[in-house]
Every structure is written in C-alpha cells, then in structure tokens.
Image (tube, rainbow, N blue to C red; front, side):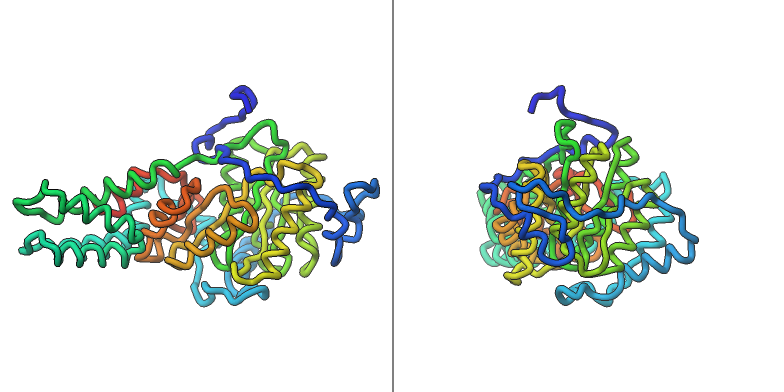
Length: 407
C-alpha cells in the first residue's frame, strides 16, 4: 500500500501495521458461524441479513463505586473455558485506570522498574560469578546457566559466552564487561522485531483480533489500545468476543466509558464468531477507523477451542477477505517457556502477525521475549510493565536491552 494511504497520528510509532496474515482460501462458513445464538448469519452466496442486533452501546457514566466493583469482578474469577493461570493474583485495574503515573515518572524508569526482577537476578548472578574468578570454561558454563534460567534461550546464552571467550578478555573480565556484552547481544536479537503496528487508512475499519490464553491481560490490553487510539482521534469500536465471561464484557464497557469507544456485546454464551461478524458489519456501516475484537482465553492444546478461534477468522473474511488485518498474541511474561509453545500453536492456527508482552513487572523471567524473537522473528509491537494506561508502550530494543542488563 502506498505511503499516502497511511494514516498517522500521535501514536503512529506504536500503531503501525505489521505484515498481514496469509489469507486462506475462502470457505462458505458464515452459515456455520450461525450455530448457537446468531441465527442471522448466512452463507456468502445468500443475501439474507444477520438477525437484528442492538447497536454498539454508547458510553454512559457509572457511579465510581459501581465502576470499581465491575472492574474488580472482571479481574477475579477464572474463565469457564479453562483454568486461569493467574487466578489468585490480586490486580489493581480499577485503581490504576483512574490514577495514571505522575508526569515525572518517565517510561524508561518504569521499564527499568518493571524489569527489576529479571535484571536483578541476572546482575546478581553475573556479579557472583565474576568476583575474584578468572574467565575459564567452568565460569562460562556457569554463566550459560544463569542466562538460560532467565529464559534468554540456549542460543543467545551460547553466543554471549562465545563472545566472552574469543580472546578479547584474556587478561580478565569484570561484571560490567559481561553486562555490556549481554546488552549488545539482546539488542542485536531484538532490533529486527521491534516493529511498530501500522494502522492503514485503506482499511476502514482496521480489524485487530486479540488472542491468547486466559489470564494474559487481553481485555486490559484492548482497553489501553482503545484509549490510545481514541486519544489519537480515531473512531474506535471494541467487540466483547469473550462471551464466556460476563465480567470481561463489563470490563470493556468501563474502558469504553473512559475512551469514548463504542462497545458491541451479546449475552453470555453467545456465538463469538457471529458477534465478530456483526461487529465488523456495524463498524463498516458506522465509519469506524479501528475495530478491536476480544476473544475468550483458551489453552493452546485444546483442539475444540482453537477450532472456534479459526472459525472467527474465517467468518470475518466473508465480509472483508483481508480481515483481520492484525492478529495480536498477548503473552504473559510470567509463563516463561510456555509462552514459546503458545507462539508456535497460535501462529499456526490463526496466523499471528505480532506480539504484545505483558506483566513484565511481575516476573524474573522477562528474557523470554529474547528467546521468542530469536526463534520466530515475529514483530513485537508493545510491552506492558504495569496496570496503568501509560504502562503499555512501544517496544524499543535498545531500551529493553539496557534495562534487562541493568546498565
């Protein structure tokens, strides 16, 4: 698509388009999407319209106490689709949404604070190894273990130790030297994938499908993206596709009130593919710039649930063969190596085009994004280091590398 067709604004650095997913051959599955509660969806060869549906809800102000209660509920019980790996984790969503960080708190300082557990573990391990110890095979082997335990990946760990053993440090090495080599290697791996997410003016709406396992922060991430898109002057709709969890719908409504974004929802248990179809149809009719579609969390090894997600993609293509224009996989950094398997399965099943990494502030395993980037070379569009709106920011390889190496 030519340059003049692109629409850029304040958040263009974050919201630029990644590569579009490969389009599968069209299939007549709109009628299939009707299984369940969306009786109006028809085969692409038919002309019948979907069943009448209520328009997206206009944001309405709720009393503060009710809003806090609603959002607190959204962050509690597990999704009926699967056990919530984050169950029991007390989130601060309601408080953080209403209390953004002070202006004096820079993104770099929040990033370093968020990566504090990972960088401290690495720094302590490196300092312990290279205090009054010579650089020999045993020391390098111990260093590899430290790097692998931080989920940086075996290949990255081996390249770092190879660099340290190439003769330049024959006269001795300090912990600072090791951290500098670590930062350089991490930046080298991450720079090719630190790509902004592009929103094309030619796609109206630009459809973004959010996927991932339960508890990764998909719904919260959608709310933050909607807020940022709206602040950039875009007309935004959110589709509450997590129809298994009423609390997720209420959570999106709270975000809709704050951002002015429309929210399309259905009753609990409604067919998610039918809802996605209706959302795209209404977003097109309403002239929306961006459509963000939430989905229910699902374990990547649950065949039936992954097939439902594939169905959502197929049904969207009945209205727009190029949709969804982005499929973003939201990864929880605390899951470590399990995130690697999630990338493999979701990429194969629904054509993931980019990643968002959340909860870096709650783990000592933040290095997993380095291992994922090294293996899959998928764009990393944004990272989250907290619950506040400002805590979701564009991914910058150099800043991340320096923060994780504690330099």
